[in-house]
Image: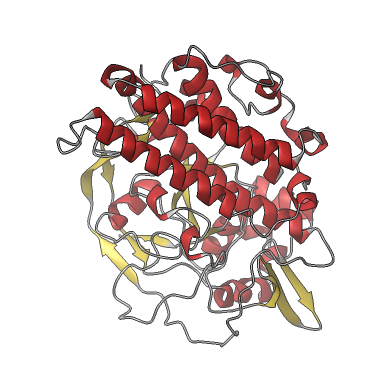
Amino acid sequence: MKAALEAAPADPKLNSVSTRVEAMLARYREIRAFTERLCRNLQPEDCVVQSMPDVSPTKWHLAHTSWFFETFILKVWSPKYQPAIPEYAYLFNSYYNAAGSMHRRDLRGLISRPTLAETFRFRRSIDQHIEELLGEADEELFSQMEPVFVIGLHHEQQHQELLVTDIKHVFAQNPLHPIYHERNEKLEPRQVAPARFIEFDEAILEIGHDGRGFSYDNEGPRHRALVPAFSIATRPVTNREYLEFIEEGGYRRPEFWLSLGWITVNEQRWEAPLYWEKRENRWWNFTLSGMRPLDESEPVTHLSHFEADAFANWSGARLPTEFEWERAAHEAPIEGRFVESERFQPAPVEAQPNDKLTQMYGDVWQWTRSAYLPYPGFCAGPGALGEYNGKFMSNQMVLRGASCATSRSHARLTYRNFFQPEKRWQFTGIRLARDLA
């Protein structure tokens, strides 16, 4: 069965089915437990709010990730499994048309039942049935299930990131400025060295996943691409640098903006990144640790593609293509602030020689100028899992890297994130690039 992933080749050290099952169960328990850890500071009232159509209530994320394992594992490979509440299939499907009808996405906040407690019972039930199924699986059955299990675990990690960014948007609507996670570090202004630009010669590269380890289907097929000479900034753009754009009238000067971006800025009355607020001539920033004075040394985040592109134009640069980003990041270590750090906010770049690429991963997703399109030879897989990525390849832009809400084990060189250009509730930022003559 070709699902919406490429599975890792079998490790010869894991040659017994019992060892492979044990490893899968350990990973399953770890990821499922971390989802619930992210909810530990929330009250039931927090978990049912939908603050805009793009946001899903925390309760829905908890249920949907369980629905995934129920739908694509238990209903397929466990003959004795019977859903306790069949209506959950309708409530907690997201967009998999081949899996059946679904409740409207923009009305998820109206789903008062099941309660949060009942949702956790649903998770426990699914976990119990998964444990039983894996405990009884022989090598043939486990080999069939394993690729779908892997995508289910990565799917849950995606929803962990959404859970964090969605609850931030929910809390930001509350004038009490609730705190999701206490962060006691004091704001200590620090100097960040000006970004340098590292040059790369023209080259024909192999782009996309090489088949080692997990990948989504949209990361392939691996193919050759011509990448002209370019240079790319050593670090993301900071809040201080973005403030200069604001102070020079960036949001009032149409020459920097794409046409649709300029329309959006005026219709939405944008004057700064999402979650910024000006009080008595001082900028404040709503974070998951509450409202805090703006740390000018942090990477700027919560920007739309339109804002990122306008800033790049104002600065005399541009956004990188996703192929340029992939070439530049090829030797960069996968390090930065990920969700496991529980900082839930980008951090200033660490002091180090300013001649290396930093923060390529973690902290903020980086907008590219590349439209989200299929690679040459791409073909979506059959069935509902084939809808995972391919059906969204229109009217969206690619982001690369990862953010402070992304799991460290979920980040990789070829990962292609994507959103519509006006979206900015994710931890999205800017890394500049330039052409080389």
